[in-house]
Amino acid sequence: MSETDYGDRVGREFPGGSYSLDVWRCWLVADTLLDDPWETTPHPVLAWMAGVGGMGMTWDDLFAWFDASADDGPMFGEHRTTLHRPLEAGATYAVSGRVVSVVRKVGRRAGAFDIVGYELDLHQEGTHVANCYNSIVFPRRGAA
Image 1: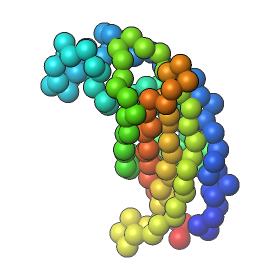
Image 2: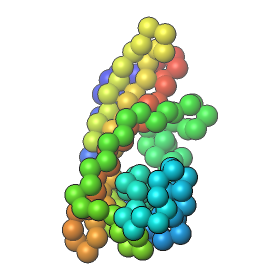
Image 3: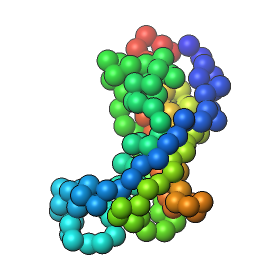
Image 4: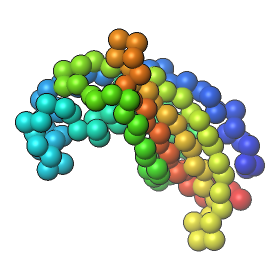
């Protein structure tokens, strides 16, 4: 398997959808994270939750784009959230996203693995609210 086997996936768009930040969910997430559940501005981690909840596909669907499954042991890699404005409890966000990178690496002990970067964007009434960059590490047993 070469380094460019999945390069054609870069730029592939997720189906997208929408996600509502229900007030009860904002409260529970804040409480779980030992944040103030009575704070009116939702915790920033909800940008990621809204992104993956509204990307329009399951994790299994995403894994399949890279000829992988949960049984292969994919791992969460990096995460970075950029908020362009605060999230709002009760608001509904339009979610879009795309694959932005695929890199093959080989570790002495880990063997070959692919790091797939993807972005999820949240919009509210046409305004860009947040961007979440994430990566998934796909082990490639037997590949070099």
